Length: 201
Image (cartoon, rainbow, N blue to C red; front, side, top):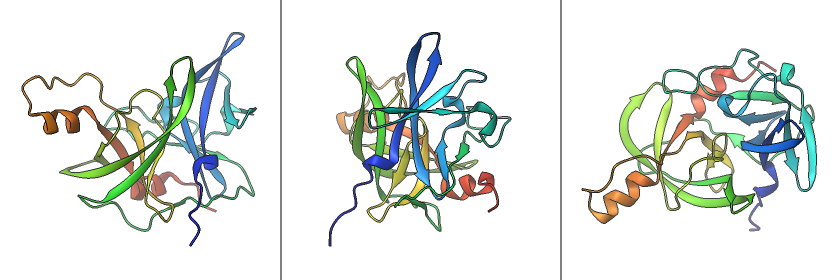
């Protein structure tokens, strides 16, 4: 069975800052929408999504919801941009991820002077439920730029959207394996909560 290449459906988002475009985060395609974390967007700054070498403008008044939620654990950090007729092999999973589930994370991050796409494996960590979010430990450290990227299985079922990595945790007194897991831990917004904000079709 031929594996599906999901890379073209996970794209970087840029903000227009004066005459320069500044890398802001990641977006992915599902159904008829482009999805990202709400805090990646800044109104009324113009945003662009890059597909290959082409930059496509995104009108700030078309994002749903128009009043974006806060970018913390008590808010719901997600936004949708309608693109009718969009075809994508990625789709939202029917259920939420369970502890010890293995997921793939595909994101864009600054590597040197330009953003590059990064793929890494993740493991769902058993934690108390946190208002729609779960923790994911990743094999590679991901931080700025990963916001808005999908965590999905081999069938392209998205179980969460990364909203925040960790870069300031104090791990000096931890064992090596625990240190790596804490440094490589990020927060993901659960699919069941993403669906609550997905506009009715």
